Length: 128
Image (cartoon, rainbow, N blue to C red; front, side, top):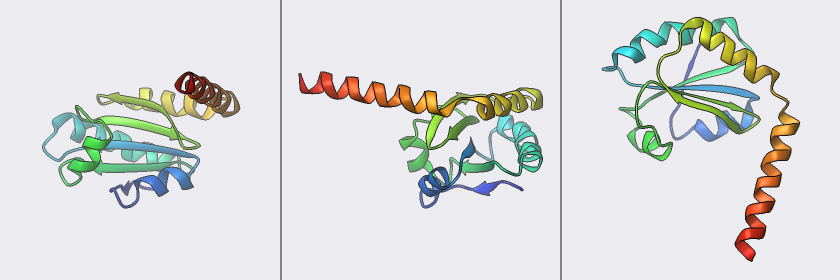
């Protein structure tokens, strides 16, 4: 599978409707973005069960601002609607492959339980 273009119109549904989603925030004028693009594309082909999306920050400035993108490229990884990774900088192929393996191996039941606990604690603190 190749990458898909992500915009404000499809970001939420892409994250909601897929188990694992990698999002590459980039711009055409960005040298490191251009270097990372073939690495990201190859990972998309090698991992057809994962959605690989690209957000052109020039065409989607409001979306990039809302996502807090401060430098590009930035890679975000979502699993089961949870943001697990967000980091600026271009990863080498081996680094991206390792990250994908780590995301696949995370026990999401533990992640969801920890998030529920955090929400319960913040809800208790807010009502006190």
